[in-house]
Image: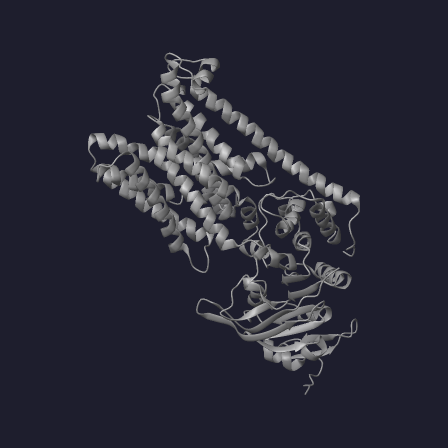
Amino acid sequence: MTRTHALVAEELTLAYGERTVIEGLDLAVPAGRITAIVGANASGKSTLLRSMSRLLAPRAGRVLLDGRAVHRMPAKELARTLGLLPQSPIAPEGITVSDLVGRGRHPHQGVFSRWSREDDAAVAAALEATQTTELAERAVDELSGGQRQRVWIAMALAQQTDLLLLDEPTTFLDVSHQIEVLDLLTDLNRVRGTTIVMVLHDLNLAARYADHLVALESGRIHAAGEPSTVLTEDCVRAVFGLESRVIADPISGRPLMLPIGRHHVTAPVTAEV
Amino acid sequence: MTALAAPPDVAVDVVAGQRTRRASRRRLVIVVLAVLVVVAFAATLMVGRTFYPPGEVWRVVLGEKVPGASFTVGRLRLPRGVLAVVAGLSFGLAGVTFQTMLRNPLASPDVIGISSGASAAAVVGIVVFSLDGTAVSSLAVAAALGVALLIYVLAFKDGVAGTRLILIGIGVGAMLNSVIQYVLSRAGQWDYQEALRWLTGSLNGTSWTTVTPALIALAVLGPVLLGQTKNLSALQLGDDTAAALGVRVERTRVIAIITAVGLVAFATAACGPIAFVSFLAGPIAARIVGPNGSLLVPAALVGALLVLVADLVGQFALDTRFPVGVVTGVLGAPYLIYLIIRTNRAGGSL
C-alpha cells in the first residue's frame, strides 16, 4: 500500500543569511527504512530536515524526491507524499484533538471541497494508531506533554504520506513515552512501509530504533550506515567531543554508548582502537 | 500504540459526528449574527428624527417614490446604513486576518499603524493640499498600502515574525499620529472639522459617492481573502507546520496582507478609521464561535454589527450625538488595556 520513494540530497549547501549551516552534503535516504540523524547541538540536523521537506531553499545543490527537485514541486503534491512534524508546532488556543488531527488532511483537500468519508477515516485511523481516540473531544492545551506529542504525530499520520520526517519527536517526553512514540513509528514503518527520517537527541535510542544512522558533525556527514558501524567510540569523540565506551546492548544487540565524564568513573577505562 | 489497520466504521462515524458538531455550531453562530446584522440595518433605516415603519422603508428600498421617506431614508439613511455594514465587514475581515496570521490579537491593522497611515495621508491632503472627495480617498488608500509595505519591509528578516511586525507597526503608528496632531494644530476652522472625521471615524453625511468605492473593494477583495481561509487556518499551526501541510506560506501571507490592507484602506477612506472595530471583531467572534473553525466570516459579521449598533447608540442613545468612532473607542480601549495586561502575563494568542 506504500510506494517506495527515493529521497536524496545532492551537494546540498544550506545557510541562514550569512551563516552556512550545511555544506556540500550528500545523503540518500533508504526507502522503506527508519533513518535517524544524530549530532551535536547546532550541527545542522534540523536545518537538513527542514530543507528536505522544502521549508528551506538550498543555497546550492538540491533535494530530489523520485528524481524531482522538491523545491520545484507543487506544495500540496509534495505534502501528499512527504510529511514533516516540526520541533515546536503551535496549537491554536482551545482547539480540540480531532480538529487538530483533521488539519493533517489539508493537502488532500481543495479550496472549497467538502470533507469526505475518506478524510474522516484517515483521522479515525490516526487517532486509533496513537491511542488518542478517547482524547478526541478534549482541548489540546489541556493535555500532558506526552499526550500532546501523540496528537501531533496523529496529525502527521492523518496526512497519510509515504515519507515522514520528524524533528526530535521525543523531546520533552519521559522515557516510557519516548519508547511509545518510537515503537509507534516502528509499527508504521513495518506495517505500512512508511519511510521515516527523524532527528534524535538520544544516541542510544537512535541506535536502537534506526536501520540507518547518520552522524552529522558541523554540517557534514561524519558517518552514515548501520548503527553498528556508525556508533563507535571514535565517532562519539569526533561528533560530540566526548570520551565513551560503546558496548553491545544486552537487550537489542545494537551498540550502546556509555559516556565517560570526569566523575563517577570506577571501572578501568580501556581505550579501544 | 499498535493498531494501524483501517478503522472500524463506528470510529469513523464518531469522528464525522464530532466534525459535524463543530461545523454546525459555527454555522449557527453565522446565521444568528447575520440575522442580527439585518435587524440592526433595518433599525438604522427606520429610526431617526422621524420614524418610518418597515413597510415604507421597504418601498423606498424597492425604488418607489414615498413622500418624505424617499429623501430621508433613500438619500440619508440608506447610504449610511450600507456604509456601516460595508465598513464593518471590511474592518472585521481585515482585523481577524491579521490577528490569525500573526497569531496575536494585538496585530489588528488599527493597532499596527495601517489605519493611521490612511488617516495621516487624508489629513495632510485636506489641510495642506486642500484636496477633497475622491482625491483624499485615493491618497488614503495609497498611504495605507504604503505604510503596510513599510512595516513589512522593516519587520522582514528571514521571514516576518509576528511580534517584531507588531512593535514596528505600533511605532510607525505613533509617528503617524504625531504627524496628524501637528497638521491639525495648523489647520483652519473648516478644514479642522473635515479632518476630524479622519481621526475618530464617522458615518455622518455619508452619500453614495463615498460608499461605492468601499463597496466595490469589499466585493472584489473579500472573496479573494475568503479563498485563503484554509491556508490561514493552517498558518495558525506555525509556519513550518503549515508549509509541511502544503501551504505556500509567504504567498498566502502576501495575498492576505494585500487584500486585508486594501479592505481597511477603502473602508477608512469612506468613513475614517472607526476605532477598534478591526481589533475587537476577531476576539469577540472567537468567544462566540469557540475553537470550531475559521473566524473570517463570523468576525466580519461582528464587525458590521459593532458599527451598526455603535452608530445607533452614538446617534440616539445619548443627549449629544457622537460619531460612531467615539462609541467604538469607548468599547475598545478597556479591552486593549486588558489584553496588554494579559499578554504581559502569559503571551496569549487569539
